[in-house]
Length: 149
Image 1: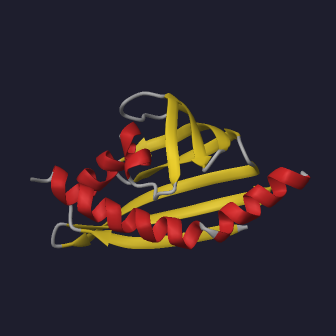
Image 2 (image 1 turned 45 degrees about the vertical axis):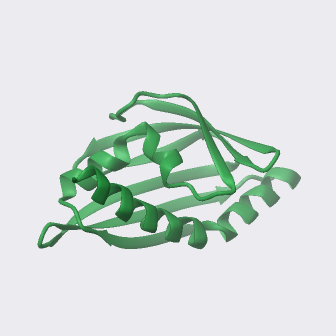
C-alpha cells in the first residue's frame, strides 16, 4: 500500500533537505496529541544511521526503530527495522521548484502486520496520515522560514 503527499516550502532545496535531516525536526513537525520521544540517533541524519523513538498516542507507546538510507540534498528514506508495520519505507524527496522554493514529496510504502492489535494500530495510524502530513507541511513551512532568518 502507499501514501503520497507534496507541498512547497519557501526555501532552497538544500535548506529544506537539511531541516528534514535534523533529529529534532521529527518531534517539531508531529502534531499534538502525538508526543515524539527520541531514544537515540545522531543530531544530523546520514546514510546508515539508525534512530529509535516512541510515538505516544495518549498513554499508548508505539516504539519505532528505523534506518536512514542514502542521503543527499535530493532526499533520503527511513526504513522501519521494527515497529507497528510489517513493512514501512518513507521516502523524502526535495525538488527545486524555482524562485528559491522547494517541493517536498513524502512517499510511504507500507504493509500491515498480521496481528490483531498491531494490524488495528497500523490501520488507525494510516487513517490519520492525511491530517498528520497536512500538519507537517504547515509546521515545516513555518520552521524553515524561521531558520532562514
